[in-house]
Amino acid sequence: MANLWGGRFTEATDASAYRFNQSISFDRKMYAEDISGSVAHAEMLGRQGIISKADKEKIVSGLKEIKDDIDAGRLIISDDAEDIHSFIESVLTDRIGDAGKKLHTGRSRNDQVALDIKLYTRSRISETDRLIDDLQRVLLTIMEANTATYMPGFTHLQKAQPVTLAHHIGAYFEMFIRDRQRLADIYERMNTCPLGAGALAGTTYDLDREYTASLLGFEGGPTRNSMDSVSDRDHIIEFMSALSIIMMHLSRFSEEIILWNSNEYRFVEIDDRYSTGSSIMPQKKNPDIAELVRGKTGRVYGALMSILTTMKGIPLAYNKDMQEDKEMAFDAMDTVKDCLREFTGMMSTISFRNEVMEESARKGFTNATDAADYLVKKGVAFRDAHSIVGRLVLKCVAEDKALDDLSLTDFKAESEVFEEDIYGAISMKTCVEKRLTKGAPGEERMLEAIRYYRVYLEDMSK
Ligand code: ARG
Image 1 (spheres, rainbow, N blue to C red):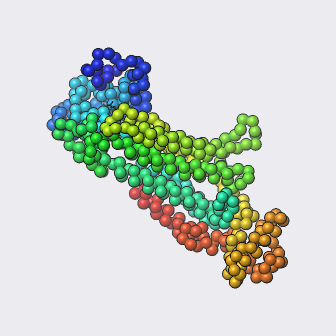
Image 2: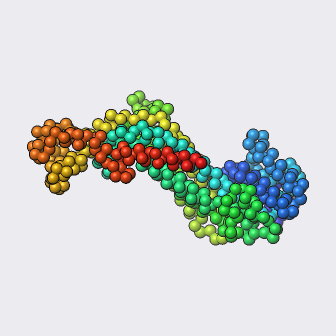
Image 3: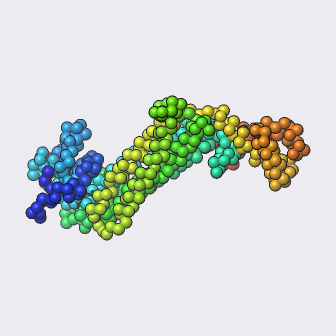
């Protein structure tokens, strides 16, 4: 396939240098964006009288046919072209003749690629947001069913105080709210159109940049500085950063699911559809999906490091280094999409062992703070209450008991203040119910939070 820049050259590019230079092997992913950008550019050229109406119509219908043919598999993107921009332009010219050669009037591949990658990133941001929405809906269903499912809350991975499954899952729901806010911020900030910036210094044609921006749905209008327009890849960096944070959240969540699914915890059972077996150990059921999500976090962080490093020393304006903005970023976008989809599937089929969780909280002395508070409410100083309960815990450890397995005589041996009502005061239910500060796991508070999350999801889908 002919180069776009043959005129000045007397010798063809060295074959291996050509391969090194090409981007068609990965920028083919942007064919739909490249075509919409070109359609908008041609519409504008026709409207401004820079090309004739007839040429404009040929170009636009030619481009639409190319798009349909690629979609339907009738036109295969060939590896002979240098990049997706040259591929589409040369197919267009082959198909419609000389009119095709006018498409690039007042445009450079520099503003063209800046536009394509922005359109691509923008639609992947929306797609990621929708996938998080799916996950949040699954999480909310779990929360609604588990406002009275008691479990140990941990600090230092040591059982600390009782919480509920709804509360624990709610913590992740909050993380995903922030992730979606970040995506929305990026979307808004990047929503300006670089088309018309030319190679770096605009053009001498009377382009209507407002018009192309509005055709392409850039609510922020055209970009303000042509040099920045062709050399700005901030939106990819920001998106990679948001994706890295999403992966960090998914990875922490996966880690908990892996722990909870282990024989030591037995809090959950991952469904067979989301588990795998061992080739040698017949008893094994492995949480591979969760482990892979945790593992894939590394490559998404890698994509962030890669683009940050690529961009760090580049003088204005466009430089070929910037072609390196795509491969790892595309990989990261696909990876996060897969992870979100699989994680959501896993969470929508997982089963929770509620009794195991509650028993783990009871046996893990998560009610020790409440036992001390009981004494404080009956007039004992907190420091004294703390050490009384500490001694009771020591006794329980020695006898392999939970606090509420002790007899009233046992309690009284440490403090005469204990009465029969100690049992009610330190039941898991009471311990959680009494936690009614805003944001705490007490059922009333949790139901309030759930109502908020329902409204939030409705608002987000408007
Ligand atoms: N393949 C290039 C990229 O991805 C397209 C822009 C080429 N521009 C140029 N002046 N060589 O960045």
